[in-house]
Image (cartoon, rainbow, N blue to C red):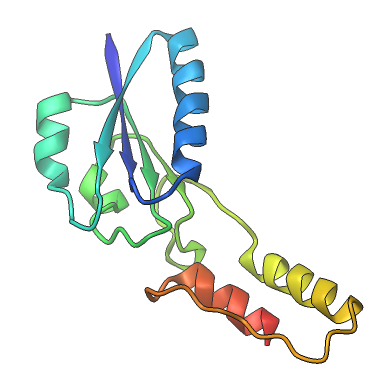
Length: 137
């Protein structure tokens, strides 16, 4: 059975929904999805690739993931979730329009005629947080 690696941050509850959908599709293709959790530590990508010999990679990058790069994956096809679009390389990218999210939230709050509102930033420096904040302001 061919393997697809899914590099995932266990700190994100949305990843469980993604994993469910990915596994459902993988079964139709006869693929096995191997989850590689990267909770608060970097993963030795080369070691994972050597051990699993995957035919493809899915990388969740929203909570930082400097080690999950096209260069690290070589010629293995990769799909990146929530990666910084300004740093795109080879591969396919799936993400949110963070500027539009920030604008939508701001417009909604303003429509409520609230006297004050503020943007509460994420505790770690993340590109998507900066994009939302900059649009919100």
